[in-house]
Amino acid sequence: MSENVVIDIAREAVFLIIKVAAPILLVSLTVGLIVSILQTVTSIQEQTLTFVPKLIAILLVVLLFGNWMLTSIKEFMIDLYSNFAYYINAL
Image 1: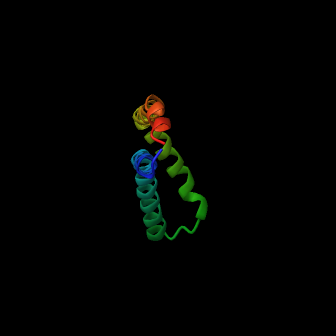
Image 2 (image 1 turned 180 degrees about the horizontal axis):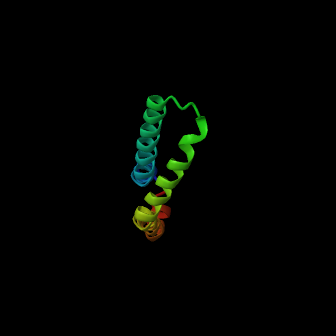
Image 3 (image 1 turned 90 degrees about the vertical axis):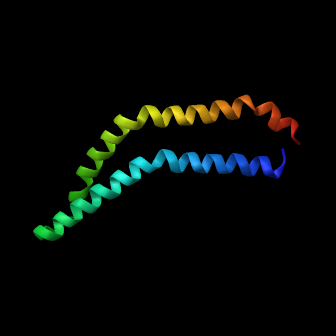
């Protein structure tokens, strides 16, 4: 397997990780920002207050986008396994 093939596979894997993790990270960032703004406005200084809304929001995102996430990962793995003979012969 040449270096270019390995770099292409790694690049596709990193892009897939970013694409799959983006909805969860964006929702978590947004909810955390909103809760921290509300904490600042109301002068509540409880550090653990952000965890429950973030947890609920992440659970909703996984329920909404989980099928798409798993399908994307499954398609990537099927593509890797189906081209496995090509990767071995490319030595």
